[in-house]
Length: 338
Image 1 (cartoon, rainbow, N blue to C red):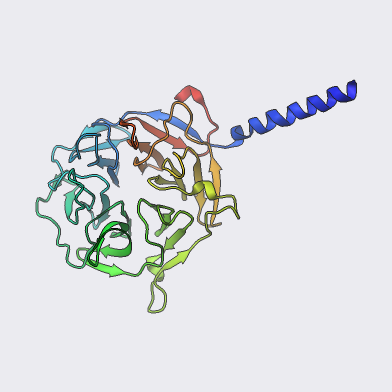
Image 2 (image 1 turned 60 degrees about the vertical axis):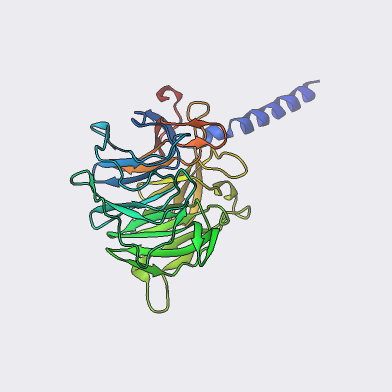
């Protein structure tokens, strides 16, 4: 009888240990000030100095032109001048030589757009004349963009190329005042996510490219090397398959990249940390249920080495979000700050 009791108690201890394994993950989601504008999805975000900007997107009825900016000291405020191009969602934004460029995307008529407009953060104003697109990317949505050393880079997405519409794309371009096409070794993809660490860009996952991670180092470009390096795949060989997703967000804290939200077979709650030195991923505390809603087509940004996510949707539900959450990767989970 005692032996049976010991066996039962041992089995129960294993059960509760396995149930509590998620609590071993590190990281804490902290509720922050809600986004001031209309709840939306498919927006863009960028950071200049002490301010993060969020704008364009779709509110469930209309594509949007409005932009808002956020600082840790002052909170949210509206940018008084609206984006001068057509209202749009699934656009991209990047900084080049102190100015910001917003463009591409899709409008309310589901027409893909191929224009860019310049924003001057020193005056919070837009140049109403579209950027010269000679040599630049074709009309598309779901592309990615990033900045390295004052040069903007734009690539992939879903759109129009060589007479064929509605196709995933793998072309890439750099912008330093004019456009130049560059090589890209990755797959055709849309809705990937990208972040920059130590002047190297990392492009992660995305539709048609779920298991791939690519590093781009422009400082290493030569006549024989185009700067692209394929990193370890996100697959079941290394237990990183849960990193795979599209329509995700990413941000950087203390030299590590973080990927959150998005969709694979369903909405992704898991949060993963990328260490570029080791080329390895570590799982962190997931979006804390039920307070931090799973979502897709959100935005993220880093201010003063602090990472934030905001906006987003659950496609097909009519639900759009304006809440904002900060992620601290070194704290234990604490429900009291939700």
